[in-house]
Amino acid sequence: MDPKHTGEILKHLEKQNELLSGSLSSIFHELHKLQVEEEMLMRKFHELMQARTPNKKNKNSDPVCSEDDQKGNSADLVCEKSNAQ
Image (cartoon, rainbow, N blue to C red; front, side, top):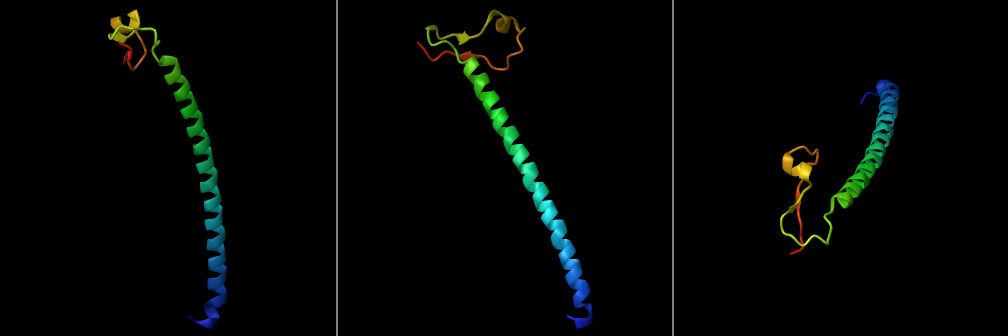
């Protein structure tokens, strides 16, 4: 390492350090936003799954579907079977 270039190298390394620190901050900010979004989506998914849970009073082992499901007119993606026998 040449002593006459030490100052330039130090400036370059300090600049790189600033850029990397800024990148790290941006990455942590984006990660936090994604974690918040994931939590919101998981809550909505949980609410949706609770709303779709079949009635426990249903004693028939056929799939629990509405008439629309049977006609193919429903926007639902899943037709669940009842657990009661």
